[in-house]
Image (cartoon, rainbow, N blue to C red; front, side, top):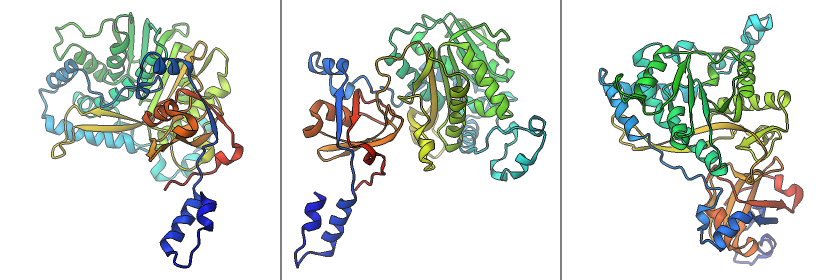
Length: 441
């Protein structure tokens, strides 16, 4: 088409048409691909009547809202404080957590010198820990009011993917490090409440543990808890032999005082999980780089065939986002229904960007290796463009059309959203051209 437009020159051709031809000449889509639809998906669509928009790679979790009984418990727990002030301070805390740009640095006692700290810009230095420490009842309530809906939506989305890809999972124990007000317990109980016999909630703040238990008791200390067998601790178990089926650490890794302590914590959590290890942080550049450092640490020190990276990457190689070095983090979006709308705002729904890692013990599942969409799908006339992370460890743009790839493949790709998996195996046929950047008109 670009050859045709470049040769289309007539005496009365306007300047706009010449600019249009030059623009189309720069476009480059990855259309030379061979797609093999997953056999399970193909059978479900052709024989069982499954709609392509409901294929197995879709993560069906949007506009998540906390359970009604939890929402009522929040109101009862905050009855002694003005709700308007809690909402305002909770939003301020959420903004502070989202925008922090410091990293866990080794102190002078760890390195023997403080030159590294002197070279660190002021904007990147560690902030005062008191900003994030929950040391009294009011500060814990700001966390409950301002952050619980967003954190619950993120964890609910991650657990939804695990449940869809591993429907036979029956966890017996769950460890939540840095549990906060207990959003991890709420989310895991939505899926495996009847199978869990031990839930260990670890948080260094005693006031936070008390509030998390009060929420599960629906704001009344004399009531029975909504989730059974929940135990609260301020420290991790001392025995290294104790194993938990699911181990979670969400939005708490930044609290480590140094990088050495951070990696020691990761080693302890990695040796503790028996089925799944989940690490979640804010979807900023700082949060993504923190998780990428943890990922590289695990690759160097715990690279075994028994445990592998389950999500989000379809491969175990270095992250292509870091290799491209374009300043864009590998993050995903979770949408949620707000617990309480901010004064003067009126917005009922919100969204949060997050980055995460999920490790699994046991062989890879049948969906391992499916390309994952790392940006929203660009739906155009008669085609759609997907920006995916492929199984060969590269970021690629691929354009799907019904004429080249079939109607089912095109409809599956068109219905996929940011963070979903494409239920197909893709073979890239045009080599190094795929690695060049794509311009979109």
